[in-house]
Length: 452
Image (tube, helix red, strand yellow):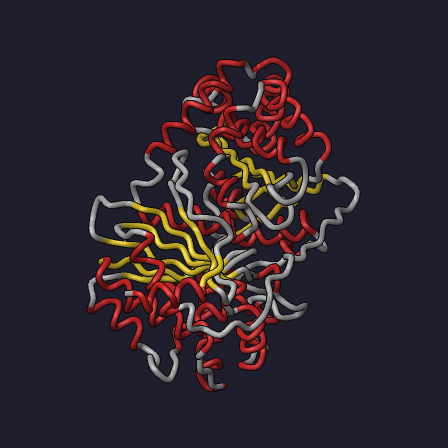
C-alpha cells in the first residue's frame, strides 16, 4: 500500500484537489503526469460503471482533402493491437456482460463501455492499450473503407433530410470546417489510406489529448490507482495545444436551398443560424440563448408550438433548439412540418409572423422562470444514468468547457434575466447568417398525387 501511495504521489499531478461539487454531478478530477485528465462522477445506485475516453479530435480537425478520416479511424480502432487482436475486445466486453461503442463529432471522438464495476480494470487495460498500440494494414483499411462508404450510402445518400442537411451546412459555414460532413465526402473517403489514418492516430491519440470519464459505483480512492496503473503507463508524447478553429465569418447572408427528392413523402422546412458558443462570442448570450431555446422549443406546451400546431393548425410539427457546445461557433435550428393541405410558403409565413410577435411582446418573466424550472427538474435526474452523466460531462469538457463551468451551470442560467433573453434572441435573428432548407417531393410525384 505504501508503495502504491508513493507511486501515485510521484506520478500524478493535481490541477486542483478533487473537490466535490454539489450543483449537478458532484464530479472530481485529477490529471496524470502524462497529461491525461481523469474525471469521476459517483453514482452508487448499482454496481456498474460507464467508462468513456474522449479524444480532442473530430472531423473539423481533418487535413484538407481527407474528409471522413476522424470517423474512419474510429472504426479502425476496433481492428486490434498485438495484445488484443481484432475481435478480441468486442468478445471480452460481451463475455463480461457489458456493451461498447464509439462516436465521432465535429470536435471530438469518444469510446465507451458500460460494465460491472469489478470489470473496470479490464476495460481500462484494453482501452489504454489501443491508445498507442493500434495495428493497421492496408488490407484492413481497404476493407473497412468500403464499410464507411456503405454507411454513408445508407445514412446520407438514401436520406433526403441528410442530403439537405449537408447542403445547408456547406452554405451556412462556407470556409469554416463545420461545413464538411463528419462522415466525409464520398470522393475523398475513397482515397483514405492506412498512412492517413496513422497520421491522425499518432498526432491525436495520446494521453495529453484525452479525457477519461468514469461514472458509477466507484470512489476516487479506488479509481486513482487504476487510472495510474493502466493509463498512467502510457508514455507522454506531447503537450496540450489550443484547439484551432476558424473564427472568420463572411458578411451576413440569408441563403435558401430547395431539394426535391423521390423519397420525400412529407414536405418540411428548416432553418439553421450561426450562433455564439461557450468558446466564441459573449458567454452571457450563450446562457440567455439556452433559456430562449427552452422557451421557444421546449415541447408541446410552448407558445410557438401551441400557436402553430394547435391554434392555427398550419404545422403538424414544430421544434427548435440551440447547441452552444462547440470549439468554434454554435448553432440554432428551427424545423416546421406543414399540416396536410398547407404549403411550405404558408407555414413559413405563419412561423415568421409568430416569431415576430413572440420577440416583440410574447416572452414574459413567467416564461423565463418556467424554462429555468424545467432545467432544474431535468438536472435533478442528471446523475440517474451513469452513461448519460459520463457523456454529458465528457462532451462538454472535450470542447473546452471546464468542469467548474459544468458544475456551476445552474447558477449561471439562474442569473439570466428577461432582458438578456430578449437581447440575445433579437441579435440571433438579426445579426447572424442563416440558411433555410426546403424538402419537397419530385414535381411529378406531386402531379401524380393530384391526378383524379
